[in-house]
Image (cartoon, rainbow, N blue to C red; front, side, top):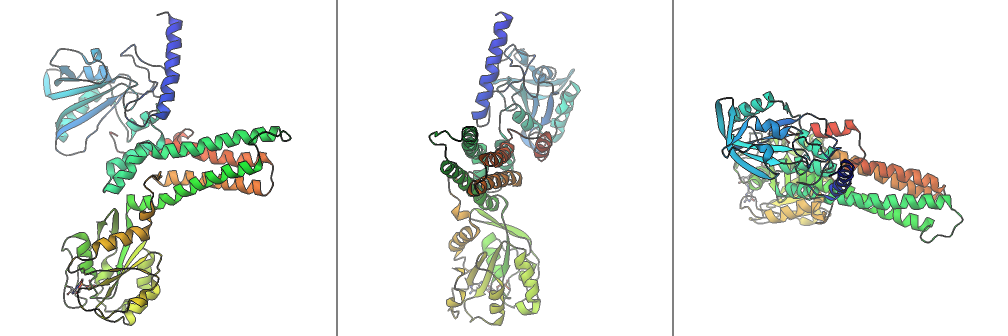
Length: 500
Ligand code: GDP
């Protein structure tokens, strides 16, 4: 093929690959990374001049298999220096997505059997040439093989460097990249679901929709500003206001969903409060399904201090301060209303427990005065015995009846917790922001949109409106990483683990 023609083809591929990269939702797609290993390479990748990196990709400890990942221009040739296929074929002669079975050798010393998986740029997670070597999963074994690979010219990957390269090569936007940590660290189904949805591109797609409507609006505003006297269809202050209002609504929804999503991801700081002997320890045992705290007939004899978290439905209750449950002093008043208030203030969710078998006394009433219906659930416990409590006293509060001793009322409590923490309102189709950085960007975008609306309402020039829309757009571009500083990207990926 003549050089010029090949050059044009490469340029063409470069644009097609970049386009594809924007609509791609993870895994293997296009990028623009040069490779000296094959002629099928695409020039111009952002990581083109970066060193080839390697790291152990599987967790520390013993396992049937351990994986070492090598990525970069020289990944395949470096792997060819340590891996020898039983077929006699070199990895550099293999196509992408091909596996070879062989052995890892340091000179004449055979370290292990191995399977090598070859990915050709740009069709890999990072967009670079990549080899994954699977060996037996012992820590020492993996370290020896990694050391050998590093001695052949690779450098040890920094935390998050594989994902950072995927981002730099246009394989993923920041919302997807950041969701990877959530996928890895998810501790319950809800956390996994939210991370999976962000990783599948839902958050990025929603942001892109808002971004493109604001971009179109900005263009309209410019035209309106340049030709104020023309009567152009759709270009009116009213229409601008409608578009801004709908962007405002979408951003507000995302910010609202963030709070519920955060509770699903991180749990909720919870206090179980109530006077001694109402059944707080028994309730904790019911929630956690264990008998870790000492439950006794004699009020106030529970001594051990437990710190634990329990998952109720989708929500992890972080019972950070359970010491109060076991106060040896008998009453809310004697431990001090101030102290109880402190505990209540430090928590996002209060489970206030009352004994159904006894009328409310002064201690119960003191507690009722310092809790707030917005974040408290009244638990009327011991419903298995005759009730002497007047439920009317709990008017305005979310109330659940339990028999912690018999394990009754769990489902009702689960529903009440989801309701009061807002997670029950999280729409199944919600695009949830994954962290404070994303939330901060969305908040700045909302501020820009609100300022633009204010400017319109105050009769400011459309130029002024355009400036506010620009601010909103800049915040959205930062959110997805389309326009982001090196410092921000470095900070994001530093939070990842090595090998990811
Ligand atoms: P705490 O001081 O509030 O932590 O109360 P405990 O959990 O130690 O319970 C005090 C006593 O009440 C124990 O004898 C429990 O067995 C009993 N208790 C707790 N929950 C129930 C319940 O739902 N029904 C009945 N009948 N007894 C309960």
